[in-house]
Length: 229
Ligand SMILES: Nc1ncnc2c1ncn2[C@@H]1O[C@H](COP(=O)(O)OP(=O)(O)OP(=O)(O)O)[C@@H](O)[C@H]1O
Ligand SMILES: [Mg+2]
Image (cartoon, rainbow, N blue to C red; front, side, top):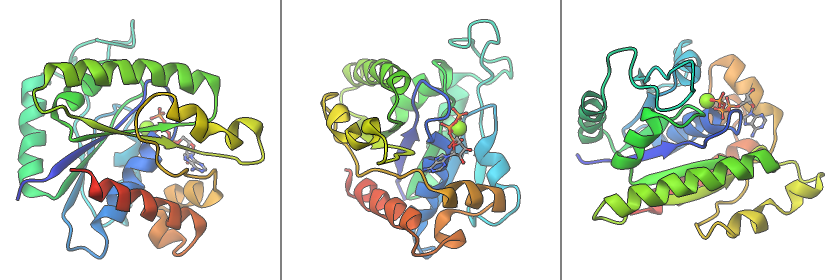
């Protein structure tokens, strides 16, 4: 088996990275024929905490880089983990699974830099806020630098409008704004209470609220991700 690595990240907190990463992983797994692993590369441990109740039905591998507290970026590896060792573990997981979904921390550092070296696809959740758009500009710069250093033109990219509230002006126009980045834009993930409640229950939305709008949106995203070469 030789799977695809999907890195989920952006350089800002709270955009819905962990929500998208865990739900996407569960949706990709489907009824279980597709083998999926999640790598929690964030020292906050959101994905690991989510899996702790044992109701996700997939394994979350905690592989954080400890970021420097002073700068919040490029802080190296207080845990002793270096990029090579991290890459070796991720590569082993890739060989054993169809998809490896990496949940990244919100800051610039070793986690995102190493993930962009390995990933087939960079999934970037973005909320309809100016602060997110600024962070996304930087994330896309990082992506393009990573592509320039690779000879395979990867990673592909998918911008995901996240936590979208269509009642707001910014929520109505987020797709149009994201298209200006020049990368593919996925259909939106709405701001929905099912996502918050599913996390609290230790489940993904497909088991917590089957056939809900939240579930449908995640399944659409998974179908798009499956088509990425
Ligand atoms: N589509 C959504 N609808 C409603 N709530 C959401 C949605 N996506 C995320 N949330 C909620 O927003 C909060 C932040 O989400 P999440 O932890 O996924 O963001 P994050 O980008 O991973 O944050 P961090 O940068 O801290 O890692 C959580 O309380 C989560 O339940
Ligand atoms: Mg997170």
